[in-house]
Length: 437
Length: 76
Image (tube, rainbow over all chains, first blue to last red; front, side, top):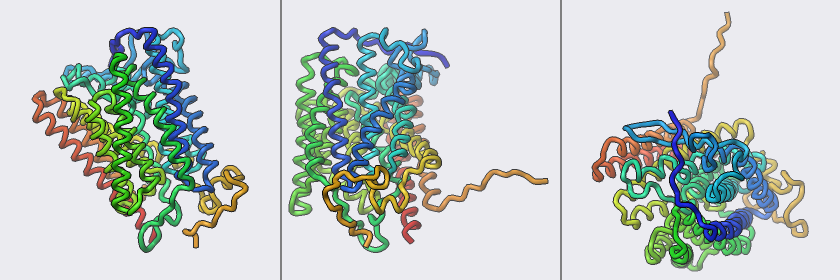
């Protein structure tokens, strides 16, 4: 095993640096949007806990990533000889782990591009860790949510970020095996959204469903979100953040010229718009009226799919990607709940995991470069075959020490009263839950 | 003489299925990686990668069935 040199990237100009910095100042709006959506899709008696949880998770991930995770991503030159641990197989180098200094050592001396890459990763890890929090709404304990976020920020996210963004083996598939440009994920569809969505699946499997969601007899109980306004406003806020993430990602990871940025922006909007239009039509046909929360899910899934492909496809292709996402998302939400008994209040598994995987596949289909589809398929195989089992195993172990699920009494009185001692809406009478009758 | 033994791990059927499914999924990943290493020609390489994904899909189906089984056990 030896160290590998970091990937060679063109030097960033001052104008690119300034633009990227401004974009990264806007990117936290995506986090704010997802936080609002998570809160709105939960119940009113868990609203304060949900929003506080979002803040706490961002804080925990930022601290843990600074302490440990950043060193493992390998964006900062830490060891004297390079940026990663490599083994050789079939005569090719496989760079599998970053090797920087812990506690952000060497940050101020690093090149501007490395500093911005690290800032991007700070925001990305916070976003990824928020996604499972929404899926565990109404039963996921605050402490457990923070602990799970710490695990993601310390171990799983750095591995994936190194493989895809920091010269790791997935990004080198093009150089080593002539597979297009290697695995491409400029906006974080894999590193942020599929990771978050698969973590959400692990959380739902471990924490179980909300009490009364799947009664002994009959269909599942509908438990609608408590505030559609939060959810829909969150979608609008998230759009601004997503545009920033996709543009900054295109500059940082694809070294896209300024001329390519307007198309990336248009593609992001087209993907989201195509998705919400398709979801609107599907829910209108299926239920007679459009469903607000499913339309929000469709919009978000369109944004997620654009994270993979906005910088790499034409506007027409982005629209197609969005429409396919918008058709699939409401059907998947229903399938997961009714057919395979997955209680996912925020729809994160269908929105982030499946939407992200589809976006990554679309890059392979539409990129038109020989071998790119195979590179994208190998990336998808890595996410499903390595990341999902790894996250489930880590979370199952964590659950032994920090139980994910609140006790039955806590679930009965609501997470706000149980964990915080007060509700989000003290002036309103919170209705008794129908499912406990 | 008293022997210290490992605690026996008793998992319900649903959990066993879920863990079995999750163990199958990395096997699919290794099939995909083997395709890249062993087959330079694009067609067999792509076919082998798809086979790896199919193995992962099978593992996921078993894990999902395990989840449904576990939910059925907890409901009854």
